[in-house]
Length: 262
Image (cartoon, rainbow, N blue to C red):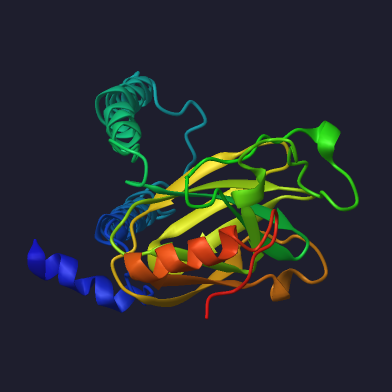
């Protein structure tokens, strides 16, 4: 099994910088193996049919066709197998994935960010040092308040927003709530094995745990307009100490203000 999994390197997968990356890679490899088996199996069946039912063996066509119910039984068997896979495998695995969503026993155990896509940039909304997001409502949207934050909320002044440069601490779960202000985008960080659509009117959570300090590229994996190719950003994974300093610096810069990591 280990020797089989070692063949993953031939798939050309990007570097793995996430604690969940190995599981994702194993799933991708498993799907490729299954598709290969299906391809070989159906190709072999196709060749067998060409040989067995060629015009020399059957010079005269039989328009009556198959008179038994074997095909019906086979269809029923396939439906039964699919039902077993759905109920006995897919649903329990999905329930397990939902249970594994990082919640944190206390504030600070999870890094929470709201990622907002807008042609053609990625904006990261951070809650500040206290970890609480300011209230948001469409009634507050204005020329100087694009995201509709409630300026009377006591947490407003500590919140800040950065553009195209997200910063997170290493070895801590990151939950990013993905949304969009215009069209459908797709938030993708390949080394973190994260790909999640950003859909207008929805806030969809995606999570990962980075385990390597470094800088990683954020891409848009959904065609979103004429400048889709340039919708890129960076994810900087830093130590917890450096992250705390960065958050404190941006929180004190004023409501809505935010700067890159230096």
